[in-house]
Image 1: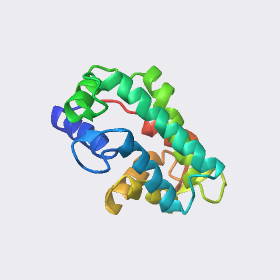
Image 2: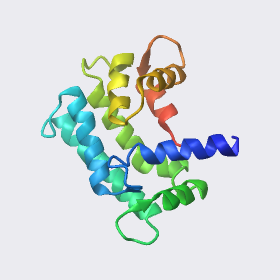
Image 3: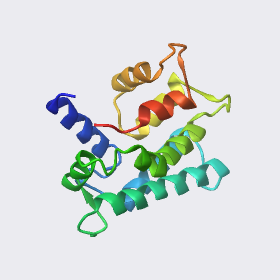
Length: 166
């Protein structure tokens, strides 16, 4: 991957959970992201899927803090995040399986509003809106994720393409 493209991808991955745009990711940011996802679909945090999402994203924070918060101040800076990504601490299959996969799976369950096992473009758009992704970019991402071109994302397409790699 070209260095400029790699850098932009890393910055996008950092900005998505930095919900207050203060240049750091902390537990409050990750919790706010979960609440934005739930709010976007009209789901409460006390429903089974809501609790699962909150728990999964809390686990994401715990692992991210463990692996990337090198100064142990409770905040992951952009520099710490970038260093962790480039060092492979956050991109290995093991790291992905430990904490990103549960978060992606929980988000998938929440946004699959009709429970049909697939995510429509509109459902995916709701998730991307919570991440602050502009609608045109959300459509582009959907097209990239939709490997079989059927206009729907199944769980395998979501998790395969959501995996972080640099």
